[in-house]
Length: 118
Ligand SMILES: [Cu+2]
Image 1 (cartoon, rainbow, N blue to C red):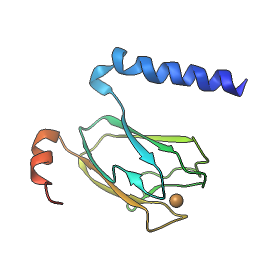
Image 2 (image 1 turned 90 degrees about the horizontal axis):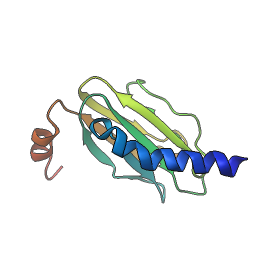
Image 3 (image 1 turned 180 degrees about the vertical axis):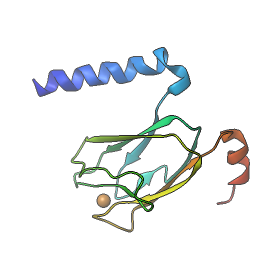
Image 4 (image 1 turned 180 degrees about the horizontal axis):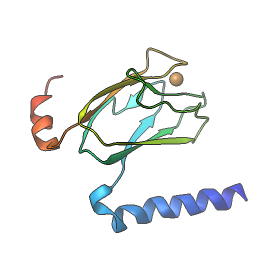
């Protein structure tokens, strides 16, 4: 039963970008005790999906408290939609050295050129 649920989710994941290209989620992998990529820039209204690929549970919490995940076991996912522009720093409460940041910019192309080297 769980396998069927996972399969349905996988099919939805594959179909979603085709149907909703404008709001395609951005993915961040959690692997080897790190967020990959650690830093992303997105447009307002974009959903970011984190997937835990480690054998260890991880969480993520925004330093400003704007989003908090439950503990994610292996292959668990957490998603959050960022409505307002800003810089959202977050970390794993179980491993505080695991940090990441989501830059929400009205014009991601501009943000990409300004964060080079950072
Ligand atoms: Cu962790």
